[in-house]
Length: 184
Ligand SMILES: [Zn+2]
Image 1 (cartoon, rainbow, N blue to C red):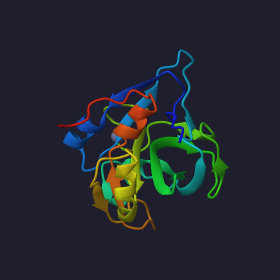
Image 2 (image 1 turned 90 degrees about the vertical axis):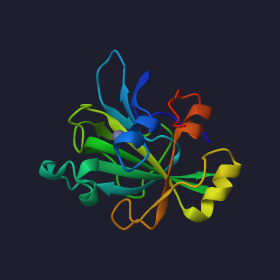
Image 3 (image 1 turned 180 degrees about the vertical axis):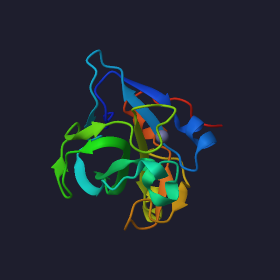
Image 4 (image 1 turned 60 degrees about the vertical axis):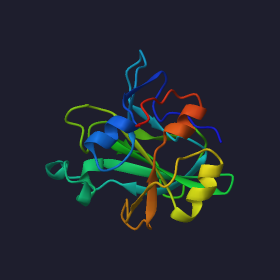
């Protein structure tokens, strides 16, 4: 499948998976647009469906991942990669302009990224993390999408099942999106 970054190109990765692992409990990457035309449009990373939208956000709790507030306003999209379901969570948005169940192409408009959630140091950015059901991990690994095992997390967003947090590095690098810093 065809992956795109969720920001206008060219993009800049401000934290790869390795740095993220050193400072947080989950593996993800942080990205911004380095476009000469400054804007913060947020795009779907692949063809898929809007699975979940989180707009409840209270800045007082922006450091508390257990309350979901550290992710700010976020949107989860669901993608089918040859029978493997991949969930993408895009966080720290100011505004989400999509509805549950919307079917979007890669690059479809999702909203405006920004500074909700834990963005004190990095400022406006998109935090990307990816999720796969444990039962799909072996298939995803055999397709070269991920390195098993992934980290099991209960309800990464409200109402979600148990999913594995996977390093997005391999699939994005394979798509030519320049993700570096895989941890040793
Ligand atoms: Zn992040």
